[in-house]
Length: 364
Image 1 (spheres, rainbow, N blue to C red):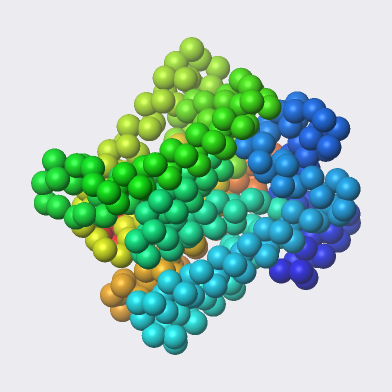
Image 2 (cartoon, rainbow, N blue to C red):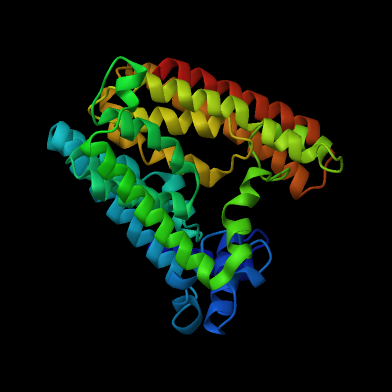
């Protein structure tokens, strides 16, 4: 990871394609505003919690690579949380393989060293699972609330965490409050409301809009693996664009509710969280490379439970990589070579979507 950070410095200065993620530049600019006593939301496209800008202020007064080093260290912490989780359910040999699957995953290595903050969100999710397995429901709720404050997507875990505390076959019993569930909800509300209130106190409406509300009508037509990108592109200049963006949530919502109900009775939620995340990302209207980390961080926890033959595992892995590579090739031709291949990118998106749906059905 340290080598990749150093390599990134070289590539940024001497090669055409930049190694550092554009988001990292946005983070750093926002942190600069904070050190000047101003709002991080003065930086256009900063659409994150102000906590991130506060955490990364050492980028300004210490070293520009501070954030990359921090994210890489958190990557290592995440790896050892994964190791402890798997070791508690299987043997040390299986746990070590899961640890290696996370630490030496090329996507994990590249995303954190390019300066993307996903490792912080993943840490919050893994801690939520850690506390939940140890029946520390209040702490689990605290961690989940923080995860949702950092990034909205962990809200999809709320129902399955809630119902798994006292599994039941009936809807009424699954939703009926008890002490454990009350602790979970109280912890969740306490951390989410506290973090959001502090952020709102300092930055007001810009915080609410950029951190939460913007994502409801977000329309990314570039760097987006989702097949929705072409639909959003075609409607981008029309009055129907916000409606199309909101409507794209419906299949996602249905998938999350169905999967949450299916896995409501599991004592070990590792597989449930993986399936939920994989389904959510697959059907999301925006899919970027860092989103893959959301479920790849959970895969090492549940891969011992996936009873596929080695041949099938390799075949599914290759299908996922090849379809992703095809999309990247088309996107490169569009973005860097200026070729008129928008339709090709969309077809590649459909292929990647189909591969992901197939993998999801096999896991189910």
